[in-house]
Amino acid sequence: MKSGFIALTGRPNVGKSTLINKIVKEKVAIVSNKPQTTRDRIKGILTLNNTQYVFIDTPGIHKPKHLLGESMTNSAIGTLREVDIVMMILDGTEPIGTGDKYVYDRIIESGAEITIAIINKIDKLSDDDIINKKIEIENELGEFNEILCLSAEYGINIVEMLKKVEKYMEEGVMYYPEDMYTDMPMYKMITEIIREKIIWHTEEEIPHSVAIEISHVEKHKDAKDRFDINIYVERDSQKGIIIGKEGKLLKKIGTESRKEIEFLLERKIYLNLWVKVKEKWRTQKPFLKDLGYIFEE
Ligand SMILES: Nc1nc2c(ncn2[C@@H]2O[C@H](COP(=O)(O)OP(=O)(O)OP(=O)(O)O)[C@@H](O)[C@H]2O)c(=O)[nH]1
Ligand SMILES: [Mg+2]
Image (cartoon, rainbow, N blue to C red; front, side, top):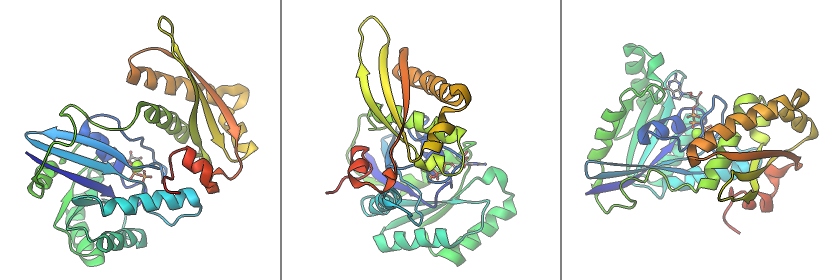
């Protein structure tokens, strides 16, 4: 039996979460076209032919502007020291920039023994683009044990990537049952689904200013369970936008979220969403702790 922990790291928006979902063939991480979508580490477990891969999706490493951003970046960087293999994901459609160099330096600093660069989004690249990107990685960043290319979104080269990674994995125990694909608690999946729908339907600062909390759950044996959810934003104007004209946007967010949660729970539910203003919550340590974004004292 082989097993190992593999961190997925990189700048925001390069496709880390899309990749972890594709690997485990389940939705464990939410995805959007806006940067800084992932806020926690998320495990995606794949057990295949006597090999257990434990992938860890992490928040995109960026220059933090508040305590939440700082805790996201710290949790991503901290993960690098705790894994067997570090995989740096790069957006193949963009030139390598200071953000990627910053990530690479953190990987080197972590003392990672096995490093793999992944050129993602090759569905948008020609063969020449891929060759040039490999050269660019070697010149602009530095050495990796492997440089691989794939498309997380279209599932190109995923199996090949897993085979390459397996070569670097060592004899080990099964950390999780064979059919387990994540260790994320159900309540967390529920809040993430709602946050994703809000990110999809809002722009600019709103996706970053939203936090979700389950305030109350009522379980019923013979009727639908009821979930009361608080959606926190930082300003009154943001509250107005999320609710929308005649409550239309909030209704849409509610319906889309409810359908996905019902699919996950395999039962019908009532989902009640309450939008609340909590000024500057992203800078407030006690609140960030309540949300599970900060652990230490
Ligand atoms: N064309 C193309 N788009 C992709 C691919 N993989 C991811 N994307 C898109 O890239 C965007 C970002 O994807 P995410 O998976 O959320 O990126 P991330 O690295 O997890 O981002 P953060 O959580 O913000 O750090 C989304 O719009 C995806 O649909 C790919 O292989 N090809
Ligand atoms: Mg992500």
